[in-house]
Length: 313
Image 1 (cartoon, helix red, strand yellow):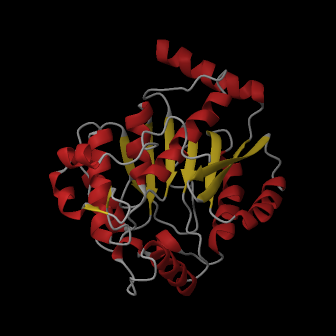
Image 2 (tube, helix red, strand yellow):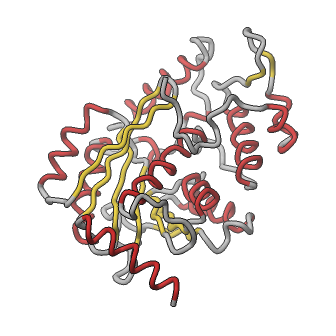
């Protein structure tokens, strides 16, 4: 079975002894499961939070926290998106993954967890802008960055002051962004989000946990918006045209495969030079992201040649 990306540091089973050494507080959440293996209760918000802290400390040397009721992301799956973005950039750069601070990504809706910029910077040395509309998320993401000196000069959080805009107020006229990424709110309503969350918890707890866990709660802007992910990504596609010279690749996760046809139909309205769907498989879960660019293959190569010349100056 195809699993995580080959460069994903989380391909192996969790080494709980090593993780506890990096974060001793994880120990109280680790127990032997019915198969005789060490594990945690993945339907418990406290357990997953402790595991995430340990993973980020052990593999990325980052101290991390998020407020209660905010999305606590599964680290291995989030890391996959970063590695596949690296492959996407390599496809425009003679199959060489570009590394270092000359590469800049924009995480749309960075969230309180700031996970993509953290992992992207620690894996490839890239710089990031994180846009966010929620003030508590902005404050927490900024605290993570300022608390970790490794991140301080490499991640900038910018408040998006309008719900109508995705790139405006964030990308300036002179910016050259190598890629954008986004984990859009995929539910269409609060009711749908709550039902989806409940199903997730019941699956993880084998039906034993009847209460909504804080870990899987998330905030309104993290989990749902009018029209769901199709509406959000369609808006992103429409607005990307205005910034087609500022950004090499626009990308967004698409959680529901059945939404791809509507997203492709929207993309065709604006005639990008290239459209790609990159599939990602994480155990039983299959997900994907859509990527589009308004640059020809030759222009993509020139983009990185120009960057190398600027670095040498």
